[in-house]
Amino acid sequence: MNFSIRVCGDKHLKGSGDKYCHLGLVCQGGGQRGIFTAGVLDVFMKADYFPFQTLIGVSAGAQNISAYACGANGYARRAIIRHTTHKAFYNPMRFARGGHLVDLDWYFDSLNADIPLDVERGQKRLKGRSFCLCASRRDTLAATYLPFHADTLQQAIKASSAIPLLYRGSAMLDGGDYWDGAVADALPVRAAHEQGCDGIVVIRTTPREPDTGYLRLSRGLGSGRLKGMPALIERHITNYRAANRFIELPPQGVNIFEISPRQPLRSRMLGSDMDALRHDYRLGLTCGRMFLERYAWQLGGATNPSPKTVTV
Image 1 (cartoon, rainbow, N blue to C red):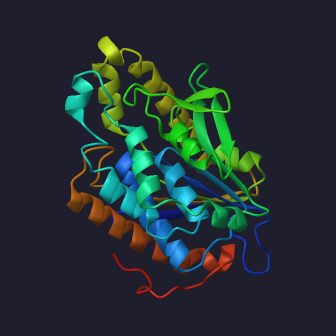
Image 2 (spheres, one colour; image 1 turned 180 degrees about the vertical axis):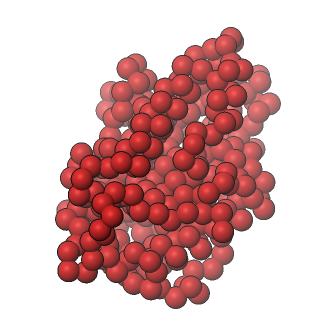
């Protein structure tokens, strides 16, 4: 199977008599590759598995973790398969003429009309828990962790997902202007630990090494409308590698449960074909089931869900 489930940290895992004090869930971005995360979290929701006290998502992971917080099984899968493949969302010809490559304004308006999130349910599910979406301040590139508010959740997801220069609009929230959170904190595991987590489940959409496509893109850009992109990509890669080091050697007493593809997913950040998206969603379903079978008894919540509880 092209996925890995591993544990980093203390060799002695806590068992049923020695529970984790504070569990966290971190969801990476990755554009359409978030379909893998959608599969994992749909299994969690189907099994009513919600043991986390802290939830942090970034970019596409912000949408996934918001759907999970609101108990919206199937939401992210439908959003990616139906909406991110629409030419109104992703349009290279429009970008060549000076417009958006990805039109987040259309995307979120369309989602809200088609499958709005039940934010009231999210508020109830999150009672007593910490939830935030990572975005990058456009002026300083500093990471900002936007909390859950029912009236601003959609705008917070947009702020976390606004790919620099490819979305040419503005993601404003509470007086701040934001870019994609992956610039400042590509994989916010340290932020979860700073909130007190001693057990952190990380769902990744890329293998541990940075995507070589980003590196090639960084070297190929240097002029025109994208002349600022190389510096942003380099910042992303630097932060991504720092997160990798934290995962490999977390602080004493902390375990990190990493769910990730072993090799690049078939889907891409943008422009994926439907077969690739469906394949990676099914891979996420399989991975989510296996994770629950191995670790749910240690982390709390549902145990050993039937492998037939979720279908594509």
